[in-house]
Length: 278
Image (tube, rainbow, N blue to C red; front, side):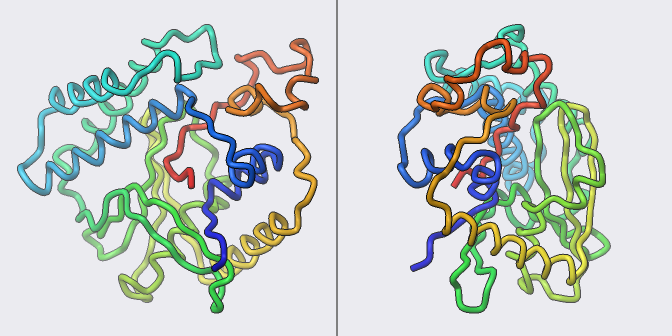
């Protein structure tokens, strides 16, 4: 049976083939995670609980939502396991950032009745080709039916920065999810891709044409072919090396002197901690 890929697996290879080798081929275990990833998980958990509560018992108060976040943080935070790359930011900075994300979302979308939730943390699996040789999977944060009848694929981001629209219009992850849901809700029904950038409190949308989705299929299969053909898995150094869980064993990172590594304030925004780490 063909191996199953995901957007995050493909991105891992594109970022650094050596990291991909460590994580998915050699399967070197790592118990740690970045603080950015930790915050993202807690925020996603709370938003999932929020919509489940809305559908079952009614809208919880903002205080209850934030209390749940604080409870989950306290239950899961382990200073020995969570990596903080930016030493200028204390733990409370990140804890407050997650709270701000939830506060922004709650106040913006209360009372959460503008659309219909069709799925939360929805696991999707699909093939890019008719023969099933290029298999994919992922998790959609929230699938929605809007009042105008459209289907929307929602994604929560806890990163501080929001990309420009031109980059969102090229985004692979949510477009792959559009392929995944396919004809499930009707092939003639419009589909919108929606990103909630919670920290800056901004929302962005994008759409894909059938031609763009077909090109995405082709391009994604080409990336998978590259992975299957790879034998060397050469490391690729850059700002994201500072967040890599394998930098302690990576020879390329060890060879990079401290003077040539980007300072924390000069690096790109840290990975947002997507849950699609399969």
